[in-house]
Amino acid sequence: MKSKNHQPKSNFIQATTKAALLIVLFFAITVQAQDQKAQIPQISVSGEGKVKIVPDQAIVTVGFQNSGKDAKEVKTLNDEVVDKVIKFLKNSGIPASDYKTNNVSLYKSYDYDKKKYNFQANQTLSITLKDLKKYDAIMMGLSDAGVNTIQGVEFKSSKMEEYEKEARKNAILNAKQKANDYVSILGQKVGKALLITDNSQVYVPQPMYKGNMMAMAADGGQNRETLAVGELEINTNVSVTFALE
Image 1 (cartoon, rainbow, N blue to C red):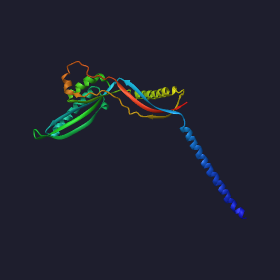
Image 2: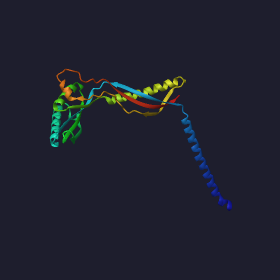
Image 3: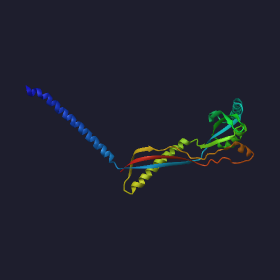
Image 4: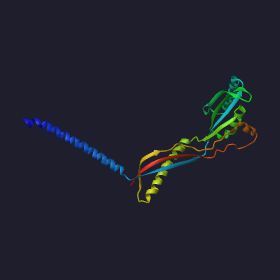
């Protein structure tokens, strides 16, 4: 009777032992598979993609300011300039979606020489020009409306997304070519990509222009080329790990 009572315990111990052995075997196989994976011959390289383009658009940032003894007066003067600028842009065929106010300020300052307070109102506008041929006419019209400073001119392309895709493809091709250059001397071949990391912070170096609208107005009677757009360059960078065959 005693042996019969101990039989269930014996079966339980045997089952538990088998389960433990299976767990140990599973982990051993997993570790072995990871080791084999880690031992895959591979190479890591970086690739750079560049695309040069001629811009066909520009974002022009302009500003104007008025000063005086009375806050309401200088604000009114600025409001008048805004009204003239918007009417001019509409008449020039620039859609409302292509211009906006960036900054508006009205503050009080003290003139220590004259020992009195003055108020100054400032405003800046950014205007997207989708036809660069209109640049000179637009700038002269803005000057006539009361704009007196050019904060900057930023060039861009209407096909920027397409060029960025092309630059990314060029970066991958460059990385693969580098890998081939390294391993071909060893008699090996580049296999599939195991890991791709995009290191790009899309940067488009370009000329920036700042100036005084009053100086431009002084040359208004001259027939001159006043905008040199040059070329833009889109740069991308990737890191790629390839398997070796």
